[in-house]
Length: 498
Length: 72
Image (cartoon, rainbow over all chains, first blue to last red; front, top):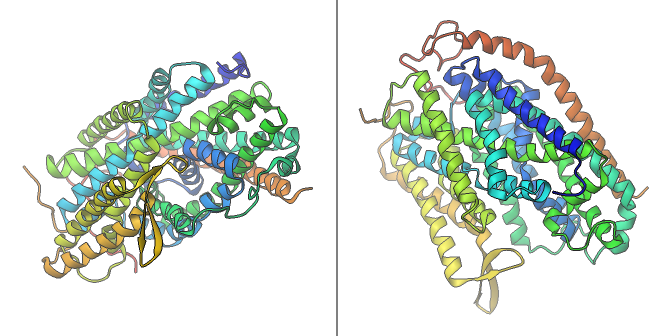
């Protein structure tokens, strides 16, 4: 266990974990109906939506990933990586949130079901389930348990991730949202106390400037322009993120959904900058000898903060870090569960399924997703790459048909939905396979890159560019399917097995 | 003060105040939300009485909501 963690800090973490279980049990005793369980009865107000959006979408990958980038490369972690997706978030707030909420959908695949029929919806549901598997978050929880509490990573993930599983099973979205709110406050308050303390103790940015390597304060660093566009494009995933959709559907009104997204964007900006500053300050701490030199850059922020904070606040910060991961685990297992019950079980097996049955099958899906995530967390070596692949696959499969469903005013066919999904999915697989066969692995970026010459000019294709190919392919599939397929009547009862 | 230090203090203050403010509004809302939820939780599954939503009222369980025109 880290020497900077006292029994008081551990007690604070223990109280936090008990509170999470308490909230779940409180909701469980009220036996919520399916719509209450899945969408909190569509009564979420702006403050709760902000908390649940902000804490769900920001996991440990942001806390550790962005701080590691800042530690190594400086302010580009904020300007070059985190903020390039801002335009996409604003679009999500103004154009998407209100439209989604006004149409009263229940899940992302249901949009596909209503506009293209069952086949496309099933593909969307499977993509959504795969994307929502909480492998990365459970791995991060395990690693955190190992570094901070000295518990073996799989056991730590099982214990702490298990608590997130239990309260999600008990209370559904209400439990997730209320625990997210507590987690949001912990995340924000502890970070906004810890970073100023680090700023004072380590000499602020003047101290960073003394040890900064060249380009450390360059806004966009030395990132290749296409890679920068590719990073910005990762923000596209929010446009089809099933967790984001679930929260928008759960909003009390379209306006509350929009306002919550706008406020969340401002909060994410402040959070991103503090994490960036924390990573840079940790580097100054290492250079001055205040922080051990043998730490991994990934752990720099965590170690710096636990050294800087007083007893009690360290416990709160650790609870906040745990909260960051748990809020992601609970939300995405719930999404998986709902896809399992509402988008697969209901249309394929029991079109007349009762509320009680759907809640039960959602719970089966939650457990299935958690167990799969736990297994994957400790089998796959490169989880981040796996998650990027899953996110690319989801965007490539459903982005075009979803946006066509929401914004395309002309007739749509079943074939358009299916061909769009299939073309997007196939092109991602072909692209990834091609780049891995033809390219070379780059250890620094953790990616495959294929460099080739054309007309005397050298080009580099990165694995991260997959969306540049798959989205046009998906769109082409939609156009071709729409040209040759027969029109699908919106709201037509989808075929289902009796 | 170094401008980057200033930005960091500003971000810390903004984040802390936002969190505190939003939590205050959450506390204001949560009581009525939970009271309402308790009301809904008392009903039997598939009992559409007292429901204020389209999908609650679906006959025979929760079905896809009836098609509605998207806002243009």
